Length: 570
Image (tube, rainbow, N blue to C red; front, top):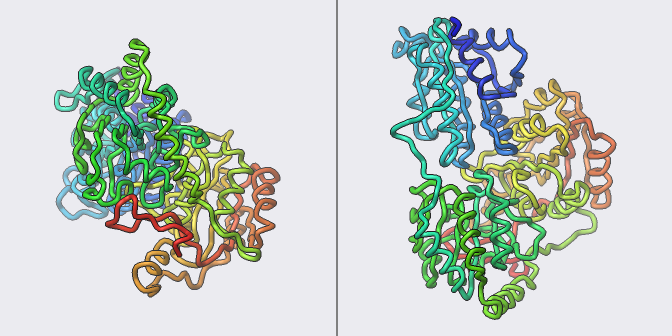
């Protein structure tokens, strides 16, 4: 064991955790850490232009991989700038370790320069946080942070370190494992409950499988696919769960909820047994919970977080456990008993579902002289062969990407589902591009969202990240405008984006390739030029789209899943 400064210990801990990238922005309280970072070459530091983007980029790396994202920010404004990124990761259960600098111990509580109560500010939006007052506790605290972030229901952990702790010295010893008496997440599901669930599934006449982001976060997509095909049941993935089951498969009914398909929503509403896996029955998925509960059905709910079960909807068979472990046990029971659902009963249910699917609820009206945003998403899917990692910001463009880009694999779709954070798309793409340099990375955004973190075009230039930005530019805050049109008498209060920049010139000013596309016939050629001819460049494609295009189907707030507004209803 050698004597090290606290700053050196921080870097050694990250090396022990095999961290490859740290996203950050330097400042006075973390200069010792940055000095230690400079003296090594194992960890690469990605200099962002705003601390919010540092956390979003670390988040994007984590979402697109099986790794914990790491961000490093200074005290005071550095930490407060990071809060939006931390809250975004917390809502979507993304494993992050955010290291923040703090003023020296003796100055804490004295309103020192760039001081803020980082632990107090972040407490409501982290899985856990630490203030490390003693250098002797630093290594074990960082070990705990990584363990907490990436076990059980994942989430962000903040480690706040005073500057004098990073300067102090002690012997370095990093524990190989960690045990915490107060934190022991359940992994294996209760066998009796699993048996009960399997029996209920086999007896179902109108079964439905409903899955969320928990399947992807737990790496349970393989088990989910095997179980779904073994049973022959219809399945839906939430916005956060897209890619957990192949989106091109016949058994997949599309996304459920506010902008879900007719077949997914009606199957959710009219099933007699619902198997919910790694999902939380949130308001954008089931609509009005009273309406959802008005029809009789049995609900099986699998989740590693016991607080998510029966939180919004009462369930009949709760199973607390890690998704892959529970699904493995279900598959074992099915195979051991050589049991299958009644094929005749299931065929009748599928016939009803196919009648709903025949409505073709995702059809839209093409226009000769105006680009429809849905068309851009369809062409993006074709040009990339459905193999790209797609990030999105928040708004109409997010929904169109989710609806029209078919995700066959997990961790290919990165978006802010819970907090709905505008500005995440470009930093997410940066994290994904660093983690997957061999893959095409598409950032789907809007002219409002992209300006939230547009300064990261500078970061993308510095680190040569060949992201393809698809800007669906309708000159409005599109989702706000849609709600104002439908529910506020078309009073477009502050939703019009006046005085927009010339995005082509702006992209070129940052050293990137810019394109402006305003004709439907130019959409596919522009995409092909960007992804093929400019494979190694960041390309900003500014698609001038129909200002009046709305996202359909739509379930209005407070309504039930069967109360969908379709294109033909207008």
